[in-house]
Amino acid sequence: MTRIELKNVNFEYPLYEVAQRSLKVSLIDLLRGSRDGPSSVHAIKDLSITIDDGERVGLVGRNGAGKSSLLRLLSGIAFPTSGTIKTYGRIVPVNQTGLGINPEFSAADNIELPLRFIGATTEEIEVARAGVREFADLGEFFDLPVRRYSDGMKARLTFALSTSIPADVLVLDEWLSAGDAEFVARAERRINEYIHRIKIVILASHSMELLRTVCTRVLWMEKGELIADGEPNEVIDAYLAKILDQPLPDQDKKIINI
Image (tube, rainbow, N blue to C red; front, side, top):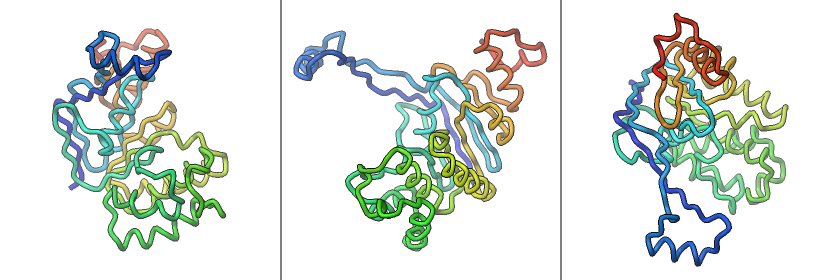
């Protein structure tokens, strides 16, 4: 069984306001307990949802709504401040920060540890070595430190790694759209093939058409709270009506409480 269960999940992280201030002054203020010191961002607020086998879940919301924080929690990159997250199945995050790639190592040396992080076996890692090199198509850069890569080259490596082993749950951010056209086309083909084998897909995107096409369910987040959860067209129409400040059709008003 593949399933994800979140119960009363809260996620906060500290925010330090140190703009235009020296490190020394900032540290003194923190030790003194200055009111200009640390504060926290409450990125996810008392969220309870269950995602079952076969679901394709889209996330919508304005910047700062909590979508990225939710993806981090689901990927195991961050942990809730309170509440519980139970996951059943292997989760693979497809984003730029989810695999722990070391910029001082080459792509060749960055295969085993990131894949171990997401639960790959020794046999899967050995199979992945050739596949990652071929798909990333980095040429001589494959054996050079990742810190020398362009953003597009890093995207190639991260995507190749993320999709190199079988998974039950795919957590996908839309950062891949920033790559070059040739890479995006190849990535889309690979994702389409990959998704058919995945039991649960969770996708954050600003492309409403993509979410309408791919998803069976959409979650609308605002300031860390779940505003709506339901059929993609209904939730997306309600979300667009809100952000564009347009009247919401009567048949859609039942799905939101704002």
